[in-house]
Image 1: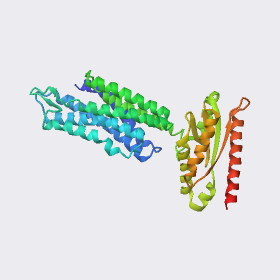
Image 2: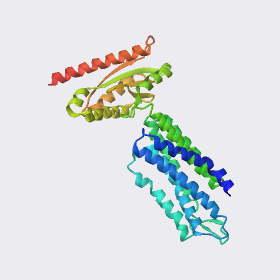
Image 3: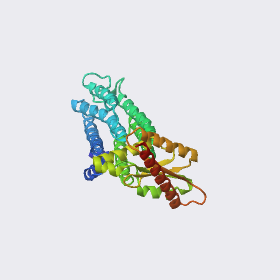
Image 4: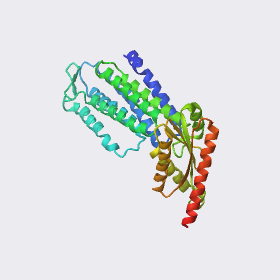
Length: 357
């Protein structure tokens, strides 16, 4: 028995152990994200222990309360792990977390009802598992969260997190296969291994993204700006330069916290109206750049107007300049033209403010 359990669960335990080590030494993520990853890893580890004990109690000649406890906990934890992956995808930002957890609560109620009724499952006198009319509730609940995970990837994709959306889809597909293999084909430990691998891979992905993102605004950073331009230069149509107005006065008059708020507000305004195949980068203190790929010039001008319209809804203003690709342009020249156009826009803005005063 020990040989079989080690064979089934050893890989999962190793992944979870390394995950917990990585999490304990990582200081880059927000505390709530670290907490979610830790809970997810612990849930997988507990599921491994529960499954092992349940496998042992299955060898008893008669049914026992311990086996019912282990089965109920296992039935509760399986969809919980997928639910945690959905929460990680949302970064805990959803205001409907409690509503989304309702299927988990119902599933737990059905699982623990085995102490009173056989509606979910029961055990015969010789300790054989007997599935009841609601015996597939845990798998249905897992399926619900897998569908929800796929739906969430649409929002993630629209938010510009394309690669993360594909990873979420891959996790959903692998989890679906694992659920089928355990519930229909009878394979042991597949959901545990898939859950541990998904959480670990997702964690590593987000960890690598920290080196590509600006920590304040979560936009891509200056290094990515030049790497992306070099890598996709053949598809580049335009470069847009943006600069927040009056940041120094904000910092001096109201403090750097207010300045940070203004920078984040500007990034949010730009993100709302970004065209498809356009990417936002923070390249300096209050300086942003946009790389536009495979878009006509009129669409780029419309996006700039939309950026200014969004900024006009706030208490802040920004200057914007655009350079569209011509045959003779190189990237350095394109950036220079965009910066020059942005400074001209800034000067015009100052003249308007002076005239209004």
